[in-house]
Image 1 (tube, protein in one colour):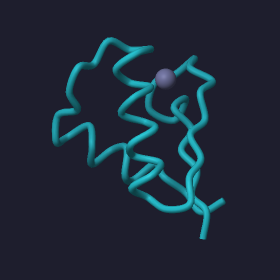
Image 2 (cartoon, protein in one colour; image 1 turned 180 degrees about the vertical axis):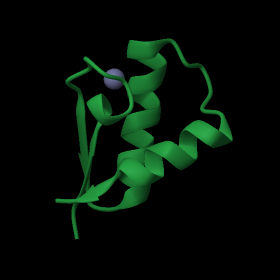
Image 3 (tube, helix red, strand yellow; image 1 turned 90 degrees about the horizontal axis):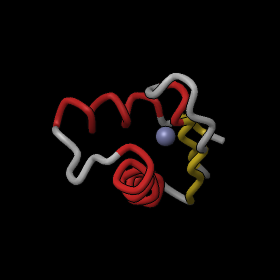
Image 4 (cartoon, helix red, strand yellow; image 1 turned 30 degrees about the vertical axis):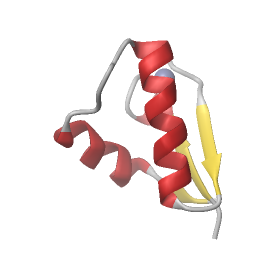
Length: 58
Ligand SMILES: [Zn+2]
């Protein structure tokens, strides 16, 4: 099932939405977005956990 992550759930005011065929693809897109848009060069484990919790079925 396709997955979707709304960055605004984690970063209020951000309207980026990552979609992918699975969690791994959404995480990869989310990590790239976090790097380019939010200046996070790496994703700390506690952030990764929040991101995973925010990924929903599409
Ligand atoms: Zn964002």
